[in-house]
Image 1: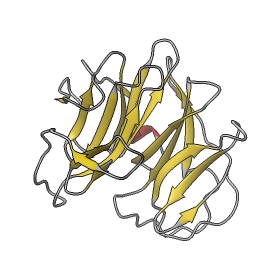
Image 2 (image 1 turned 180 degrees about the vertical axis):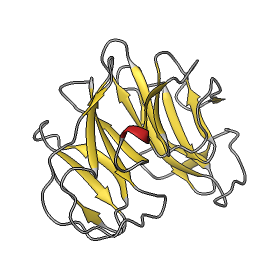
Image 3 (image 1 turned 45 degrees about the vertical axis):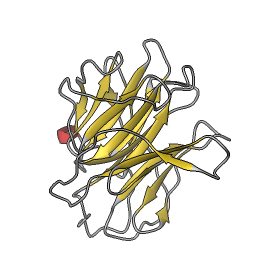
Image 4 (image 1 turned 30 degrees about the vertical axis):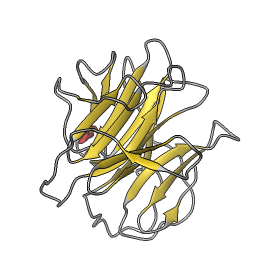
Length: 209
């Protein structure tokens, strides 16, 4: 479990006792105390754990949380979302304010998959991988950190899917009216239907495509 200020805890007994893990994370940043925004466990190798921190980049454990390594290799510090793509090759994707990056190995390098200059809304938040196709990414987008776009109808710009290698992006059809300001925080694919995705908005709004 990750909290703010950025600290990790682990439980081995169904939630009764939590132990703080020994991992070095930043104590301060421009938004105040850094916070752990995402934990991802590799479903094919359960001892590999990834932690995304805003604003302190990515840390990785190869032994189930006993020891941690802070990732270098050009990973941006301001993490907004993380997702594991289990295709070939396996990748970890991370969403940052102005780009979506990926590591093709265990975090040695983090080349850009796409920069948000290509999108009508250029502030990247959450990302999700389509369950039945690891090459399809759903990206939740806003216009700024706080969201200032005074627009109550979002026909196609709030959530945007794409394909890696070559990276091609296209609008995702959406329906319904989402109240301004537009602040998508995360995205996920609905397990009952891999053709549907759902973004989560701030404050407390959900959308569906």
